[in-house]
Length: 128
Image 1 (cartoon, helix red, strand yellow):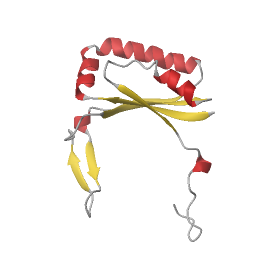
Image 2 (cartoon, rainbow, N blue to C red; image 1 turned 60 degrees about the horizontal axis):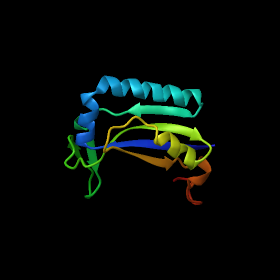
Image 3 (cartoon, one colour; image 1 turned 120 degrees about the vertical axis):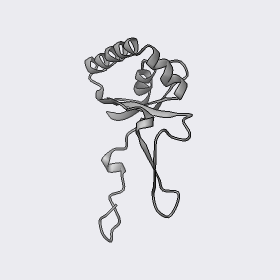
Image 4 (cartoon, rainbow, N blue to C red; image 1 turned 180 degrees about the vertical axis):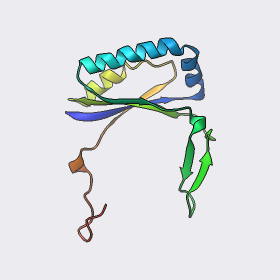
């Protein structure tokens, strides 16, 4: 089995559409989560707060610069995720196709690297 992250991506417009019928969206999302739990594939699921409440730490310059939200560029917002433990990428894609989403939003499917795939550090000091 492999873990896959289904990343919910939206825009200001898709977020507004979702909020317009939030009760129905929450009900269908709860059912989707129950379906994943019954199939024993759900590891975790979280939604994120409004992007206007976040900050950005920008490492473009010599020192990190912190900017309060809302972000200057909101063409695609990371709205939350589902973490699944499934046999194949195709199975993760099939679950992603079932995510309750409004028209115009996207779900990005990414495999989570296993511990043995992450470099364990240099030979000189054992640090990453």
